[in-house]
Image (cartoon, rainbow, N blue to C red; front, side):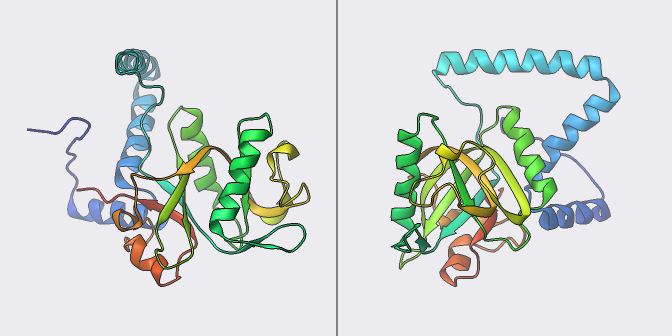
Length: 241
């Protein structure tokens, strides 16, 4: 018997091999890629029918959430990951990972906006444009995309997470692309980064751990990789069964 939310699709061995390599290079899960392709296929075949069926499906899902008392749609199994190293405030004082997250939590709680802009220069050329477009597109659709934070130390594990609202990336260092009030005072409005991620709902992560995850581009276990200090920013997921 098929499990709810799963489907089996047959493809010849050559096509499967190409698809596996495509997902590995793009750093996305097979389920995410298939969902996107199914949307595109149905839209191209009969836009009117697809739109009608999608409206019905969204109505059913909304009713289910109301009954369950849920306020969010499903969480995407495609996470942004960041290992926090030592950061420095505007006066040159060092902040460890815990202190850095606390600065963002304070800003999010007190700036009156309900979100904060997290910045990093971890990737030399910023995030790939298509990856940024992908995340922003599914966020606008109402799906939940999270960033997971690990902190340096003996544990090398995921300690915090936040909900992503928007991602902006550039090949060059840029200042905050949004309201400057959403930058923690520890870093100041002149803070620059190649990647800016608007986040909210920052808190301790109690359900996900590094040993549950793999790096999207290689399939390597996240716990092992970050313990070897080989991975600081990228895309991870929970392996499919």
